[in-house]
Structure formats: C-alpha cells, structure tokens
Image (tube, rainbow, N blue to C red; front, side, top):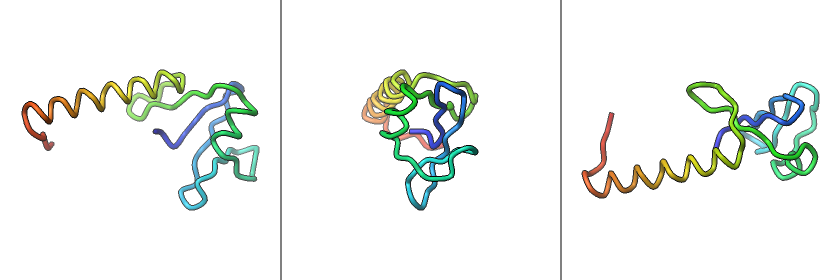
Length: 82
C-alpha cells in the first residue's frame, strides 16, 4: 500500500516510518489510518509511477489482481528478474 493518502479536502497524509502514524502540513499530531477514514471518509491513494489519485478500494483490488497475476506467471514460467 502507498505511504501517501489524500482525503476529500485534498490534503495529503504521509506515513511516518518510525511511528507508523500519518501527518499532513496542517495536522502535526499523528493519526492512524482508521482515524483518517473515520474523520475524512473514503481516502484516495497516490499511485506511485503516475502520481494520479485512485480510490483506496480500487487500489486494493488492483493490487490484489496484480499480485495474483504475478504469482501465477511465476508459477508457470519461473520468477522473472529485471
């Protein structure tokens, strides 16, 4: 999952690797992901390569499908290294 989430107001929440909590430029006290969802509703995820925002649920589904395809290809053809 991405380390950046965007709420409905357009604020980007970034995960602090040490505490595991999320911060943005307006809120300096850390929040958990469940607190963010409760307070700001559905979140969007910033997609790594393109930087576009996609709904969190769609991101989970897409990630799961990619993982399944990757595992199946590895099973059929062996692991691929780049």
